[in-house]
Length: 86
Image (cartoon, rainbow, N blue to C red):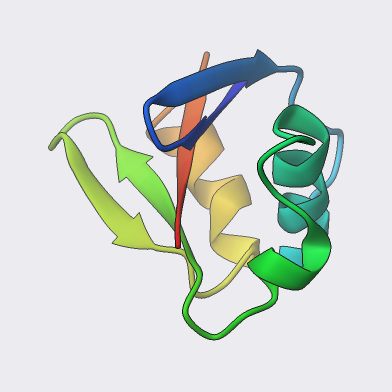
């Protein structure tokens, strides 16, 4: 399960089999929040996507999508949280 947060709204979606790029993550946010977000907004340098470390209750800016596989396997086995900040 993947939880996407934008503002005060959180959507639960099924985690894709593979996340190969930041564009994949952006597309997930656009599909979850189609009335609030679009790809152009998410590609802006002022937009950041963060991953939540549930054990520490802290958000870290997503810098490398390959780390998501490690994070989901070792830290968040049943759910995964991401937030988008404009």
